[in-house]
Image (tube, rainbow, N blue to C red; front, top):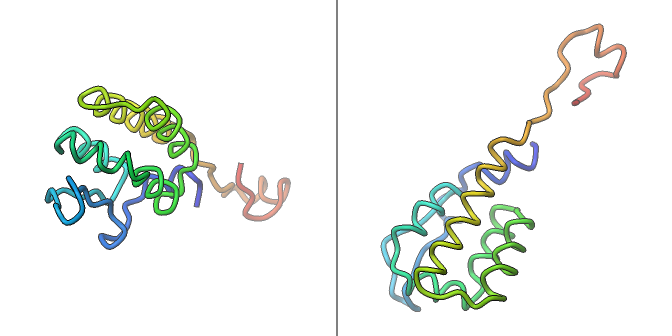
Length: 128
């Protein structure tokens, strides 16, 4: 499966990102995909975003569950390193995630060559 399909694919609920305001203080919001994550970044209290940013939860989930090292690095470098706070944190995080979503949606997915003549020329089940 191509990288962009893996990253954009929803994950099982047990691997979803659960937004908390603090330890034991669940917001009632969760995200099982990058799209849901972006939507919830706009909806949750900024206290939740600051809590997760401080702990490294965003980049951990993005790396370990979504398998998107590029986005995790961007979150780490652009948010944690600059110590974004409040609405600036929300706006920057949402911008980073939605830009990555758009990039992934518009990345061409390699197609299998189905024409038998082309398969013979390029080899069976070749992707381009």
